[in-house]
Amino acid sequence: MAKQFSVNDILQFDQRYRATFINSLGGFKSLVLIGTINKKKQSNLAVFNSFFHLGASPPLFGFIIRPDSAERHTLDNILSVKEFTVNHVNESFYKQAHQTSARYPQDISEFDATSLTAEYKTNFAAPFVAESNIKIGARFERRVDIIENGTILIIASIISVSLPDDCILEDGYINLEKAGTITCSGLDSYHKTTRIARLSYAKPNLPLAETDEVFERADNTNNQIKQKNKEQ
Amino acid sequence: MAKQFSVNDILQFDQRYRATFINSLGGFKSLVLIGTINKKKQSNLAVFNSFFHLGASPPLFGFIIRPDSAERHTLDNILSVKEFTVNHVNESFYKQAHQTSARYPQDISEFDATSLTAEYKTNFAAPFVAESNIKIGARFERRVDIIENGTILIIASIISVSLPDDCILEDGYINLEKAGTITCSGLDSYHKTTRIARLSYAKPNLPLAETDEVFERADNTNNQIKQKNKEQ
Image: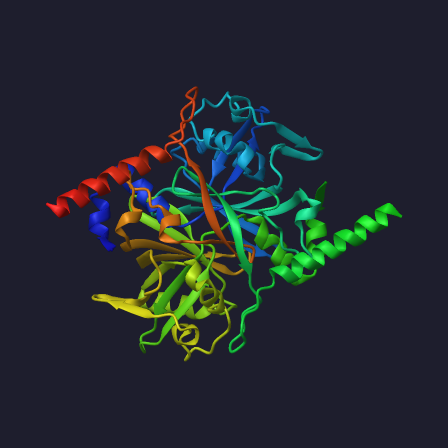
């Protein structure tokens, strides 16, 4: 049976219940760890579930920070250092990722508190998560204040990407399942995925085709060719 | 083996390859159909994968529109009518959801073109997707122009929610898997999910507990009580 809620029903929910309910309504979400550092070289790591794609040319994304939460340190560090990292979460360390949402004092690094490994690269200040399979180096572009509720949209550009070689298909698609990336829902629920299908580019009056097999096959053929070349 | 890409590598990708690659980098995404109508009562339906949670008090969300794409009609209708619907996508109609991304002329409704059913409710102009299990009625609050690439952030508030009664747990969490909600990655890949676990609220120096069984059990007990009350 379908249940209906008006905005008044929702506003009368207990605050914690409402937060859980409304957070669930957004569907499955991107789950990333954002790594930052301040000018005193203190690192910080925080889990976010509001990462969203903004554009490919130039490569841009956005995410939301709540300055009244543990996310405050992430905001301060990004505004001061202008560089940060975005790391996909894998099943092997999702509990550690969740634990970074606890309110640690500023002088405690969540890397130390959760035993995740900070990985530093040449010419880049902020720490990556060594355990993560897909890692993005990002540059702060602009903040947009969301006056409706005091949150802040961070707009950033992608300046480097690291990911497993065998997860990139023929057409540029990244097989996230092969890379072990997981997703989340609500405030605290973690999920792995199973692909249903990839579909062809949609045009009016043209039937859709499932394209995943085509690309996987092309990819396997390529890998076999690469393997053969290596063996020779 | 990890492969590294600099921003220069990425900018030299073929345009289509880059769009596929960068869209994949965002991880798994929220997948919704947005239903709108114009003042001539022409309906429109379009698939979006950038829905994100903004806040619970008041209930707010955001999503990104590309005005140079088929999404233009959605933008025009939202700005003119100020009301629209957000409908979760289920596996039973994901191909129809994908097909709404084709560039149909303005006088063709994607509801008709894809055989999805427009459902109208009293005192609300925009059409819901009857086939969808989780449906949100939304009110336009503000547009934010993303000057970096000409996209537009729509900020909206939630004014009604409809969802299956048995998918709401004890604490307000919505069991999206039970509701059949699916997720997507890249531009064209669709995935179903399997829950790994729900975790307790994180605090420094406190071990995390898996809470899902607690809530599912509480929920089943409640349902048994409700069932018993009905029978009496």
